Amino acid sequence: MTQHRFDLLNPLRQRLDQLEIRNPEVAQFIYKAIPAQCPFERDIKILGRTLFHIPPMCKLNPLYDQLVGLRFRAMCYLVDECGIDLQVCS
Image 1 (cartoon, rainbow, N blue to C red):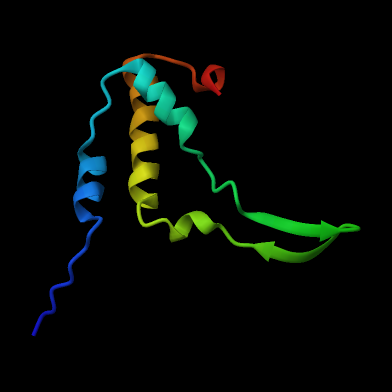
Image 2 (image 1 turned 90 degrees about the vertical axis):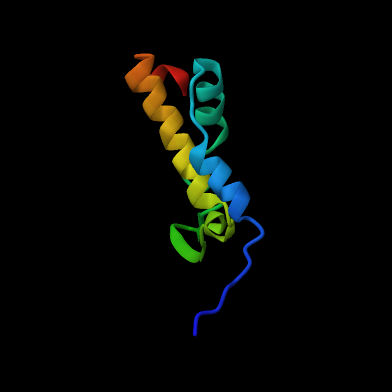
């Protein structure tokens, strides 16, 4: 017997996955707005010794994979279609 689970965020996930990048300004905004790495992950050190590690909290975001995919598509659009050097954008 299969169980059907209702996912409230599924329509938003599908919308983000289907979003096409066609505008260089929008692509640059997405590329800059969505970080490449989780900004919250940290090692807390005192006197060179690691006391504890704060894990990446981004993985708790239910839309994390879709946002990273959107950033990747924006990056590919800028490089492949616009010929923009991303080191200049950063």
